[in-house]
Length: 242
Ligand code: PEP
Image (cartoon, rainbow, N blue to C red; front, side, top):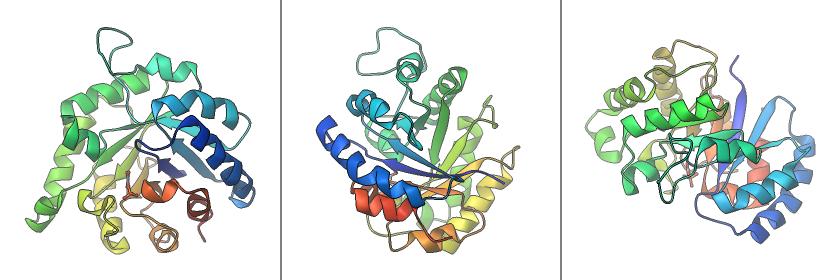
């Protein structure tokens, strides 16, 4: 069985003081989260070190939101895998649609970042998903298959998480129907060589829809943006019924 992983993606939100305040409310709620659920916080770079200290001994793992493919070099604004692992980061989100849309991320650079993450023992969370125009044109499957084909070239599928995030559902409140997400995730799984890969759903997940989403047989977790910013709301999500 793939592992269940619920990850918060804080995007470009929260100062260190706000991050610590969040933890004070959030961590006690994990007492009732089943041990089998892995909980992650994928946070801005400046929050990583302070959260790493504050999460020590807790059940929450730390994730970054990007990583460069070189260990070091003249790459202003980037961060490398050794810099992340040194401070206790275990996961990294790669190829989020906001990186692809606003920062020119391509399937080829996504593939390079995935390789660097794995080479340093980080678990990458590869984000894939279609735009509204692609969905309306009936191109969801072909688009995702192409993202996977290039993104996963030479990638070790024993240390990998995939997040299916339909772009039209991200930050819009317009959640993908759970049965549709289940169908697309099943198609993604059919493209993989390792059936144990955790495949998450992401796109306007919230405390009201998480139970239904997680009841779908192919969905192994969630990547949560907006609703992970408030401790009580993210706590309800990680403590979903099921
Ligand atoms: C995300 O940031 O990956 C995301 C799915 O955002 P939201 O939950 O706000 O739609």
